[in-house]
Length: 241
Picture: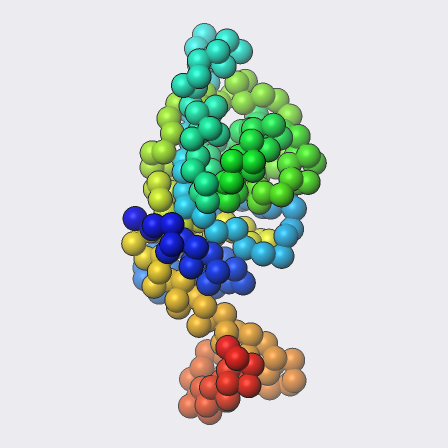
C-alpha cells in the first residue's frame, strides 16, 4: 500500500510527468493495458492529476430495482462512494464504457472536490459537463451525457477491482492523469515507475531542446551514442535537473 507520505512525494515527482512517459515505463515491465481508453479531460489544467484509486462499479440497470427511491438508502453505492472516497484519492468509475447515461453530475463532483478528492474518472459520461469543467478538480470522461445514471446504470459496489476503459483498476493503484488522458500504475510498481519516469522526462526535455536546435535523432533518441549521454549530463548540471 502507498501511504500518505509516499503519495505526497509521488505527487511532487509526477507533477510534470506525462501519461505517455509512464506508459513507456510500464511497457518495459510487460504492462500494455494500463491506459484508460477513450477518456478525456473536461478542462485542461497544465498539471498532472495524481492520486490513489477508489472505485465504483456499475452494472446494467434492472428497472424494477433502480428507481429514484434508491437514493433514500444512504448505503447506495454511488452516494456512498462520494462520501467515502478518501482525501487524495481519485474516484474511478466503471460505467461499462457506456456514456448514454451520466455516471455523475456537478453536485456529486463538487462534493468530491470539497472533501479533498484528487480527481474523478469515468469511462462513461458526466451530466452538467460545463459546470464540472469549471470546478477545481480534475475530471475525465468519454463525453457529456444528460440522462440520469438510473436509466442505464445500476450502482452495485464500491472499492473493488474494476475495469475502466479496458484498463484493470485495483483499489489503491496510483492514478495519473494529464491533459491527454489517464493511466493506472499498479501500487507495488508506483515508486520505481515514478523514479524512472522522472528520469525519462528530464532526458526527453533535453532531447526536445536539441532537436529544436536542428540535431538529428540518430543516436540521440533513444540514447544509443555515448556522446548523447555526456551531453545530457552536462545539460542536467546546467539546468539543475
